[in-house]
Length: 226
Image 1: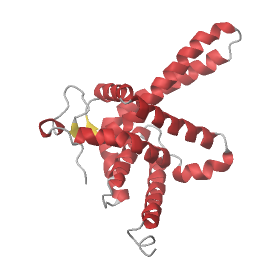
Image 2 (image 1 turned 45 degrees about the vertical axis):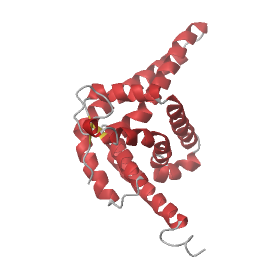
Image 3 (image 1 turned 180 degrees about the vertical axis):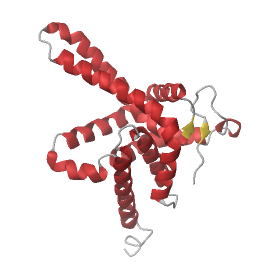
Image 4 (image 1 turned 30 degrees about the vertical axis):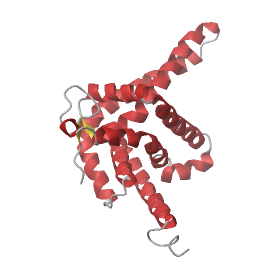
């Protein structure tokens, strides 16, 4: 019983992880306020979560800000594409949804399909961007390939994000919870599915895992840890 409540016990570890997720959520929200830096903030969040899953004893805040600084240039251009495509889907949905008649059914189906592809790429994009250095086109290519190649994991992550975002955005009483865990919690739950795949890429054949990724494959150059 004493070991259950000790500093190495499950209760202490759970509380420690909860506090870390709370801190990461606050840092991500703060660093996302300019909107344009949201992509760098999300990539930094996933990097810290993967370190947390590996149970590495690090200073979370300093690690987060170091990654955020590194991600500004490498992730922001891709994030702007994400932002633009998301705005395009929303605008089309708002426009076509207001049209009366059956003629809007096919366009709406295409928009829904676009949203599914968008979310499928999203759930892989920022974890991969957090761990591997490559170009914008390679980032999107790898995210799409991972979304298709690990479809059951992709579906699970999409459900996690979609359900939690729906809950948080449809109940004003839960907004305080969103402010403390609304981003870091789904990211942490998603890591259960994406991190084993990413870790296999990192721990792949020694001749490949440290190479710069000129061809856009997932085994690109891993970012240096702190």
